[in-house]
Image (cartoon, rainbow, N blue to C red):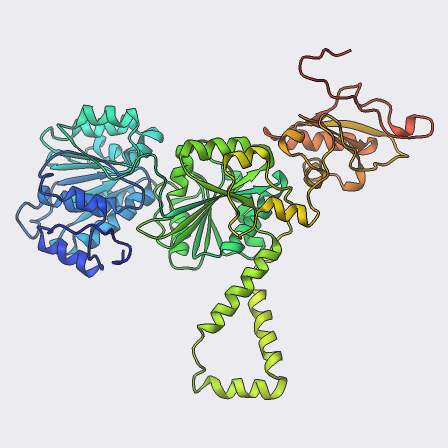
Length: 599
């Protein structure tokens, strides 16, 4: 953390010279709010119940406050025997990050720090515990295993830290935590750090803490000031392409893309790699070695995109993470805040972009409102906007280019003499563009009325998306309310079969995105699709009779809880054109009004 990233709070005097020197060496000229709060004179040796935002420097905070407990007035530790401090973290990655942070903070004190996390060599951990450690950092399950097998003796503990306590309860570690805390000495300090304080956390604190000092550095009902939220409209069948355009438009140092399932992670990761992105994947099915390799690739810059599930991304701390993309919408406001909190850390700015399918706008609006954040509603970045950004970035990179060296200058002059300055510049531009994945062409029908009521803000590109759509003619013509639209002429001379799709005008159904969705879900081509009729709450469409059985089988195999496709009712799928004299339009039942009985 640099001095610019530090809080404006004045740093209290650190009583341990070794820790003060370590902070100065790392560039700390002041402490963050939570760090200043936990080392204040009023804290003393009290138990602490601390709520602070993700990325606010909590690891250094409890590293500083527990120093008085485990070191006393000494500047260095005695020979390592039984652990004096135990830090419990929810995930392997977070535990290893904590170990790395404490290693530099306590380097001059001679501290021995052991880690005990699932997925690592348990025999190596056993040897480290047997050799003695001053501080042990681990995950609840692995610590419980060592404790029950007699490999971990916590009878001499002076302090226990529960890091990200809310996450540990969310992951189902309550029983493990209670066993460990019950086995620890009663006369100990218990420091509980959590981003949120739900009732379960408060109940746990009352059970295992003594007169805990409450420290709250979070301003309630106020979003994280360093994170800017964007809600990007996308068609349900264009989420993958919208991820591509979002990554290309913002072009930050590192990006974390969240998916709901392991299968979605595998698919999106493969799609991004195929398009030329330096991407890695993180999910629960990967081994610890594979997870560590992926994280290291992100940290050293070999990869710039990480596609992950919520569980795999818990506790991640990537210093250069500037963008979080929600490829699948979060399951609730707390999950959205946790995901987004991976960026905007330690004073850096970050962007959290939610990809909102037209069919899930209401859900997205509820998420944003429940999380208490403001979000800019706009279209996903278009190919033209991305190319404009590329031009700006290319020009800026040339402006900051250093003058040619003595070795380079003769080659530059030779190239200009042989092919000319314009040709040299053009070749450089082409070389630059070949390294960039091509942006995708996306469809956007503009904002809905519900969306305007939720947040009538402008887009990030300085334009009102609805005005732009009206001006360029991309806004679909609206049929009278309650009337269906026939958007494709169909195959008038062939037998057709009707199907029903569970989205209509209330969810912004439009043939421009329904057509590719039907093709993808049913493994058919657009030539095998006939008329498309859009009603208020559903849509009906024709499939060539010869392809209908194959189409229905593909739809059943695919499955989709949000958008269902099924054969339509017999009266809607009335005689097709080919069975009626003279052809003509297919019969379409007029949608019933609310409360009207079927005739």
